[in-house]
Length: 296
Ligand SMILES: NC(=O)c1ccc[n+]([C@@H]2O[C@H](COP(=O)([O-])OP(=O)(O)OC[C@H]3O[C@@H](n4cnc5c(N)ncnc54)[C@H](OP(=O)(O)O)[C@@H]3O)[C@@H](O)[C@H]2O)c1
Image (tube, rainbow, N blue to C red; front, side):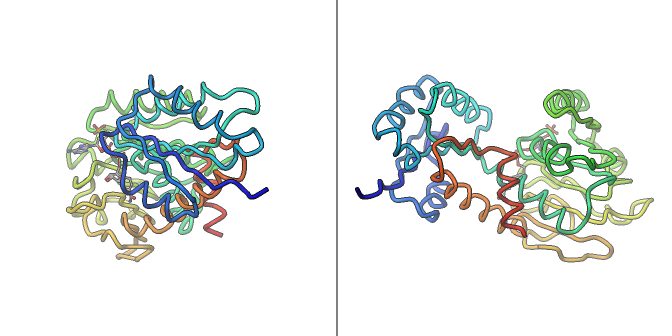
């Protein structure tokens, strides 16, 4: 009997399904892409049942789900609703990458690890309360350091209370400690990066998070900085979006496009891996594991 074709069903919480995610899917060796936009949690059960009950149990691994959308919380609700539909062996694999947050955080951590051993180091995440920043913190405090954690993971926000709330939620989830930092003035930003060995800038697109002068701070400058913002001006003054391990003065620099190469590889490999079984749930930590293999 001929093998079933590989069908990826793209669910998006936005009004239009992400063109970016559709193109990556088509470039990842699938046979058919079905897209659904503007999806609500209430829609999910009948849509996912359509994926689960059409082909026989032995062919379920040839159908998989992708969840995306700019509103990360809304997309996470779709994923949670989909997981509830599965029972016993009746499931299809799923991949979640709302707004590229999982693939981007995994690739950024791996870029830092290409340059420096993170164990015992001080790490600062500027814009740490956003989806990418929170996933960076999760990976850095957990899977990326396993038994050899960084000395500190500082998470910056313009509002101390917001940073504290995110740090508490992350600590509850991972069992690790995170330091909240208010970063709403040149002095407070300087304090947050003063003793950092590695700085990630994960602030909103087009926002400069680390201004000119960051590399002439009182202590020695960070060994590695990673700016995830691709929209001018740079998130870290002087870092180019295309930087991929460029040394500027004493600091190794990565920009969003420099990180993006590995991010794209992780995304495509994750789509391919969906079709290896009908049981895979690929989210933040799984993207990091996929990235380790690609990064060898
Ligand atoms: N290279 C890639 O492929 C790729 C993929 C995905 C995302 N990205 C980039 O990664 C970065 C992080 O993404 P994200 O979705 O997590 O970002 P986001 O949610 O838009 O913003 C992250 C944080 O930035 C802070 N922020 C917002 N406006 C600010 C302002 N005017 N001044 C200072 N801080 C501000 C906010 O923290 P507080 O309110 O707590 O201060 C917010 O939680 C973005 O630049 C995004 O474009 C790159």
